[in-house]
Length: 446
Image 1: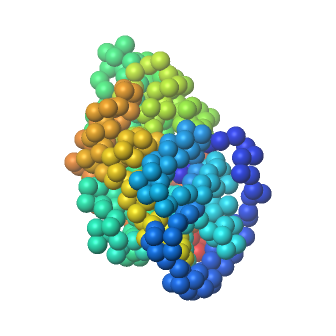
Image 2 (image 1 turned 45 degrees about the vertical axis):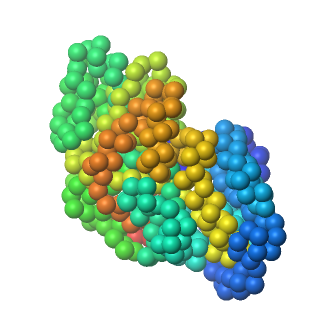
Image 3 (image 1 turned 90 degrees about the vertical axis):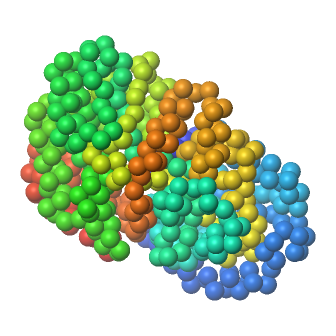
């Protein structure tokens, strides 16, 4: 998961290190996968899919994360082997940085993992090149049980009518605020359902009373922009095109120029710091803003970095614009000779009570709502319990999931930051920055 949008703890540089690929080599590698797919599938058809068809099965699994995630994942896979002794695992993991370069190398080089972790930056790209197995038939037969998932959560893995990935966990957008600061100054806390204008007026009030800007300026944050668009009846993407116009972007940038002019947000240099920093240094925990725009399940990581009490609510506006987002997915390589076993492992990791208890909330809140409730009851971390409670409350208000982001999404995100900062620093008017962003987006998505 792109660093600030999902639980992706890193590992020290050098572990499983590969020289980073250029984007051209990355795309060339994926193209090679598409060309090689018929051969791979032919080989798969000759081999046994299920454990026991041809004796023992060794399944390769690849994921990103840190030491803690590695230990949890290895324990869960060991539990699967304990219950299915004929299945063992070849496990590989590394930091988020460089992960997708290595995945491209493995798939293009003829040595793809049977089961791998992926996020919504790349799911559509890999699915579009027939790298991922369509899991629809497994879902329909019940071999892959998503009946306890929020509907919008499993649907967020569908690309062009095919189920390309299964949510390893869930998160949604969360507006995190400094509860201690507000209570100390006798100020009201933000609430789910307040309008954008009400939020900005509240932030202005906080700034005047506490001398701390009430809110980070989220005009560079694609999460906030996406929710706002959905509240306007638009979306980030529509088919293979952008789902918004230059006028929409202008209105979004103008909204936050007004907030900056009113002193509701920090100065551009501090806003930039919030745009560029990782989750542990968000402005809400460094004391440079009373509010940060994050993912709700990042509350525990935020809380570790401040002595103040934090609260979390939905983003402003109608909360039905938010959805149950897959923090990341498990996908199966289409050419795997052990497709059935790989799918069964996904089913185990998301639906087996012992496995879900082991994994906890490291990859987001458990996708299975029944097991999520169990994990919540046994959680001892107050911030984790708060995160689970908020997301469970919001789940009652979630709308339909949007389509999975299209190829070029990561570039769209970075171009939004660039254009928004041009407006924040006054290098461009909202309209000029919007035009720059639209041109860059159209180039990014081809």
